[in-house]
Length: 269
Image 1 (tube, rainbow, N blue to C red):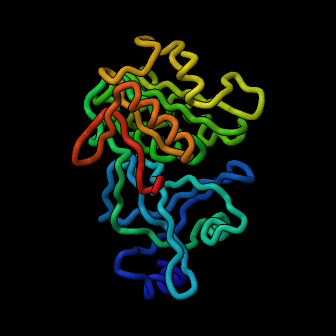
Image 2: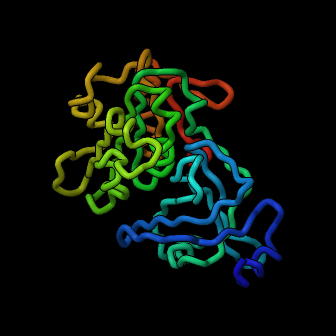
């Protein structure tokens, strides 16, 4: 354990552990991802979130981050925006391998397979960094046993905001556990709203026009009898698609009562 990690651990609350940054990747001037060491006792379900933070004035600065790595991974990976004047992200974007960070001990969340009823197609609708929990789910073998088809839709402003695009376009070809299943069952739909791209438009627009369903097979609409949906991203997207889903007959699920769609209410407030 490094001296900086030891010093931080000496003042950490019992609800936090101190981990080390293992790698950092800057996607562009707005986005970066980072991975940290994983405590041997840390358990989570793919799709959950946890508190991440740095020391502050008197107490730690903490923020909820969805875990982008699957539940079996040896590291914990996260995707974050860069906020120049953000109390935490303005500092977190400067971390380098070896730096210590706080990690909450209790992951939680509703973007998990257990909160959904069985179905044939699973649609994972995301904007921006809302992609993170779906990266976790897409690399978990269990999700391919539960659903015949997994569709990740990632909506961003410009093409360089499409973090993990290469991995998803390759159907997770380098993943040791799901590469064969992902090749057959995973569909990635990137869409851009503010520049020329092969798919242009917000998620709701793609659904309404039927463009989302081109090449997927099956119904050219969302059907609560066979389809399941997860939403993560902007408040506007979640509000609009939740209203659409409810109007179509979808029922919201939770860990206690599985349903047809779920959102992460911890981020919606």
